[in-house]
Structure formats: structure tokens, C-alpha cells
Image 1 (cartoon, helix red, strand yellow):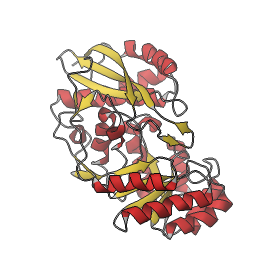
Image 2 (tube, rainbow, N blue to C red):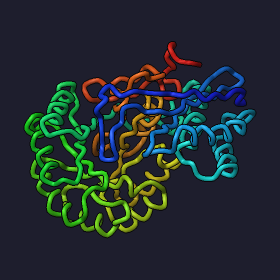
Image 3 (tube, helix red, strand yellow):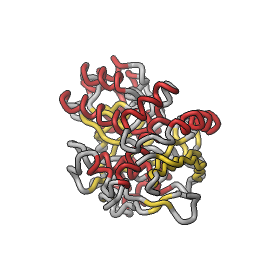
Image 4 (cartoon, rainbow, N blue to C red):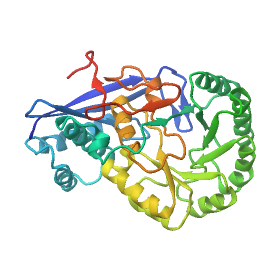
Length: 360
């Protein structure tokens, strides 16, 4: 089948909590684009690229790159994913988030055309479901604890506590949350690089006393020596690289030198599904753990990440693919969390469908 039509549809998603913030600032709305690829059989596959400044490039910049790349897709065989992506890389180097959206749309289209699931297209599922972790945005300790308690009541058994680099305040956040959710909920903390190595060495063990078992990017992404020191000091707790693991060469270096214990995977950051699988291929022989981190994005992106996650060997800690639940105006339907768990969708493709209320 050949790709006969391509469209780019803006996607604006307000958060249900307008006060949501992390260390870079507040987030009230998530802008992005949904890519529609249709072949001459009338089948459509979808991809998504976020445009949330300062985490991503602006909507105008991303729109300009999409406008350059989209014409090169028309007339291509929808099964020639490798060759198509090679051509796009030659046409416009870089831009991994845009390339990821296009590649995901190609995989989704191919699976839907073959009337199979994306997981089956990638070799088949090893898991039928995946527990999910929800983030708790930066707020005063009591407010964060109240949010955590509400998520626990919904059935989530994994929570991620955003922390800010203020050691005593962050400890108060951890204590308050543990006090509200009890011992049955597993906790991790995400500092978004706000600690230095010395303060992290003093503070993170105190958080571990309250059952925090995973620490995501506690210090600067560039401070690999500091990350290695933390990893050695915090055993059996795990230090996870996020901002330090934004490319395959970075992940290779982290694995080869045993700098961290876990890698945070994101399809958008790594440039697509093929690179995620390559990253897993680096982690597995190195004995390095990995999981999917959070991306504010609609159900299509999360369903595609879930489809990949269910094919992977490891599932040592919860993935973060449920953040669509606090984004409004989702263009897609069909993916829902039940008791803190996402279950494999029957398909075809990624298993979600375009809502009748959104442009086609």
C-alpha cells in the first residue's frame, strides 16, 4: 500500500489542574500536533508530537519542520519504514520528537493495514498488562499528600513525588505522602536535576527511610561522576537517568560505565520505536533496568508506548503512561486505566480510535 494522504491536526489539551507545576514552571495547557497518514486502502495511522515549551520546541518551529517532511511521505510504500525514515533523516537531520511522531504513525498504519496489533508487529507481547505510576506535582506537602491519597483510592500502587531541591521541604513532602498512602504504595522521587551531589548524598538516604526506592535524575545531567557516586552509595535504592539519557550514545555510555541503575525511556526523546528497542538492546546485556517515563500526551502516544512496553523483557517498576487522565480534549478514545493498570488493547494498530468529535 502507498501513502496517499497526510494531514497535520493541531491538538491543544488543557490540564484538569490549572495549578500543576514542576521545577521548570507551571503547565496549564499542552500543545501539540496529531499526524494522520492514510494509504490507498483507506486505512489511517496516527502519530503525535508535543510542542510544550520549554521541554520541546515551539508549535511554530515544529509545524515548520512537519511541513518540510510531510510531502516526502506521500507516495511512499507504507511498509518501507526503515527506508522512509532514512530519507527523512537525510532531508532534515535531527528533530527526534518530530521523527518519532512520523515513525509511530508509520508503525501504526502498517499494523492497522495488516489488521494486527502494534505489539504483534513488533514481535509479540511478553506481558498482557502493565502497572502505572502517577506523578504528584509540586505543591505544599499537605496538598501533595491529599493528591497522593486520591490516586491511591483510584487503585494506583506506584506514585512519583516531584521534589525541588529544598531538602527539608522535600523530606516533608515524602513524609506527608507516605503518611497518607500507607505502606502498600511504592514511591519514587524525581528531582529534575535540582540537587547537587553532596546534598543528594545526605538527603536521598533519608527519603529512602520512608520507602522511596527509585530516584530519577537527582543531579545535573552532565554530572556523570556524581551520578555514579550516588548509585554506589544508595544501593539497594536505584538511581535512574532521565535528562542524562536522551540519546543512544548517552545510554551506551551510562550502561558501559555502570553509572546508573535504570534508564528512563521515552519514544519522543529517542526519536522513535526503533531507537527505544535499540536502547533496550543496550540495557539488557549490561544488566541495566529500564522503564517508560511520563510524557504529557494524548492516548495515541500512550497506547503506542504501552504496545512497545508489553513486548519488552523487563517490567521491574511501573511505567508512566497514564498521565492522559488529567489532560482534557483528547482526540482519541479506547485506553483507560483500571485499578492502576493498563491492559493490552485488542487492536488493530495501537488499539485506540479517533473520537468522533475531532477532525479526521
